[in-house]
Length: 257
Image (cartoon, rainbow, N blue to C red):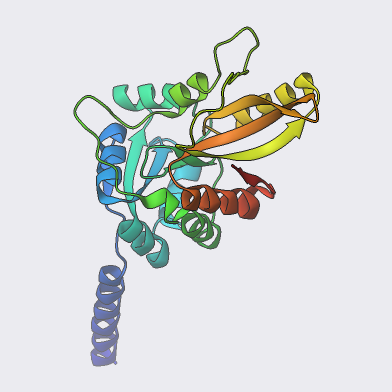
């Protein structure tokens, strides 16, 4: 009987060791969010950012379950640059303030250009997180970006503020003469009333960080107001983001040309 117990313990020990080494831990960069986003851009990857605190119970649950899931950790390591931000640290608290983190855990996902594309403010299981991770892993979100020493990826708050146009009406951008086509935008809506256009503009600014403008146009001697989003170098990029808006936000938009 004693020999059987020893054999069982040895078998369990070997099995446990094999299981432990089969789970790939997420390769988190500790705290340096700016460098993580910069690294992701250079590698053509997205950034996965987890805001946490040592005293946060739901954060520990996420660590033990979702983030320890082999499929989740392997997918993040292959397609994302991951960083953990402790809000109790000096730098972590500054990042918390910059990105308006109010609940824990909060997960932010940035594309390779440093644009915030997802905010998760709850505990999520492995299945849901994998789905979100794969949804954002598109060609548009994973372009290689070369950041010089004088530039850095734009942050969420600065993009949100600078997306407002400066003119005599808030959020209004007037083009007197249509410029030559050098970029593409997505037309979100078209209105014959400026106030309606402005209402949609404000709703979009609160939800997205892509550039958004209201552009006036004439149709049948009537002024129309187009709400446009984005600034894409190619039509292909615009179409890819159009698909993202449709699949994830149920928004049926058109490429402005």
